[in-house]
Image 1 (cartoon, rainbow, N blue to C red):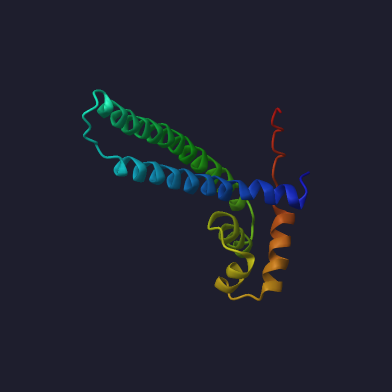
Image 2: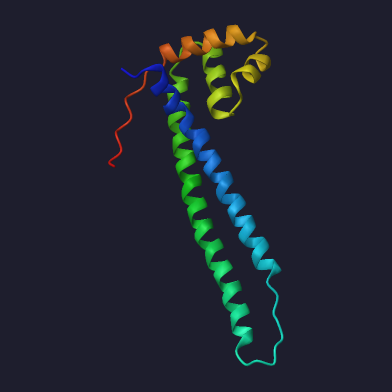
Length: 145
């Protein structure tokens, strides 16, 4: 049986995927900005224009690689989300499901979820504890080091 902390870690995987997606999107935007700032230079020295072309090409290649990684991460996030949603859906009580969805799918803090549900923080904390207790998950496979 999984501990409450292991269950939280399981549920937090989607938010972790989301953070990685945002990071990749920001990195793509930085490379896009760099590519747009690179301008062709005019120089009497032969071959000087090739250097500008290489920098643009480097930026475009980096963005293509990052977009591929982003696409892979989006697929991962969708699969993780479905897995978490199935686990949450197995809970019998609607308010427990809703609280876990707010917390682990929507990324709300427990305080924000409590406010949205019109509960005090203490009530939400108790419901959260109950939800984790009732949530039945298979242990995550260990990753090879």
